[in-house]
Image 1: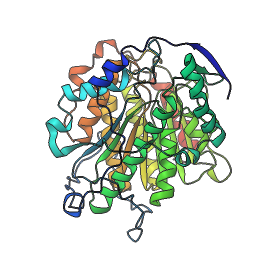
Image 2 (image 1 turned 30 degrees about the vertical axis):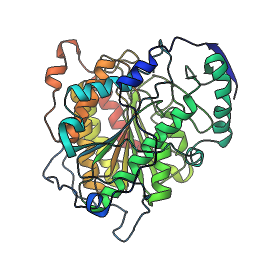
Image 3 (image 1 turned 180 degrees about the vertical axis):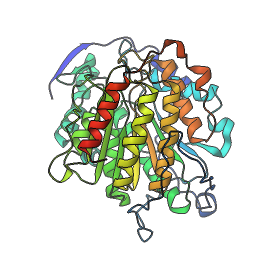
Amino acid sequence: MELQTFSCPSLSGSLLFQAQCHICIWKKCQLYGSDAGIGCLQKLSSSKKYISKSSLFSISCSYGEDVEPFVPPSTQVFDGKIIYCVAPAMGHNKDSHPECHLRVPSIVSALDNMELTPKFRGSEIFDLQNFKPATVDDIASVHAKAYVAGLEKAMDQASEQGLIFIEGSGPTYATPTTYQDSLVAAGAGISLVDSVVAASRIGKDPPTGFALIRPPGHHAVPKGPMGFCVFGNIAVAARYAQRIHGLKRVFIIDFDVHHGNGTNDAFYDDPDVFFLSTHQDGSYPGTGKIDQVGKLNGEGATLNLPLPGGSGDIAMRTVFDEVIVPCAQRFKPDIILVSAGYDGHVLDPLASLQFTTATYYMLAANIKQLAKDLCGGRCIFFLEGGYNLDSLSNSVADSFRAFLDEPSLASKLDNPAILYEEPSSKVKQAIQRIKHIHSL
């Protein structure tokens, strides 16, 4: 791996943020006793419907009752609606870069201000602090070992130079802590898989997981980093779910404004991982064409839907009803994983879709319900993009409200005056074409 070195920007604020934000503890967690951890999970009402116009019928998933997947002995099981991990990667930072260390702390601060943390919600919400970093073997299930080893060695150079850019990866930088921070981010997702799966074994309404992590992952290709992303967090979690828990069929939804090319490439020939990406047409990195549907045995298990610039809430609701739902119904997943990028928001500086807080509430509520109907409620969100700190924080907070079955605050947060007419005819054409290609 070739590296270009640049001078290090000031990181003087990182210690302050470490003191102020929610930092996870990387020690091995203890197994909850049977009275504390194996009690019945709270049963939620099954009457909740999709916010959009679809009405699903119940489909049993291929994860049969006779299957007893392995659950690591350190897994924490709890009674609640949300389980989340925080991995802010405070040392992985370039102050002038959109993907900086302010992102996760801003989300955590908003959750606290809006009373969406365990301090205010008790057992409804659980902050999983005790988790381990991913192992090299976990990462190597997706990425080339040469890349993993090369990044670890590059930490010496980063220590000498302060900050380096990884050549050929777009604007992806590394600092002396990037390798370890990236292992921690991937480990957070793995631990959430363990906890959600364990909860699903003892109740019908396991908590929805959310990995509030960085560096993000969906652009990282098997051979290296790309587009702010170091390791493919969601891809690593998908392979872990298959390998450790026997969850053969993984359905990945990526609603980041940019195409998740790394996840796409990792599973392009795999029929057991369905990758569905909606993204802005023509945006970085220029991949994710509508006719890219997978290859060999995986043909048909990749769906890329580029949306025209200006697409907004109406477009995404229609996509959910007419594309995401029928794809998931037909695939019959064992678990749903979500690359949750909030950079499609109308206020985000890196693209030109016009999603709102209400769009992300709708997606969170509907995907949660989809998982409940199709795969025993097993669903985990992974933070990807989102670079306007206000819209990012508000949208994640409203996603939490959706997981809690509480009303959205979007009407108080969104300003409809800044929205403009969506390109409805172009959206309709794209949807009709994707339905034809995938026989939906």
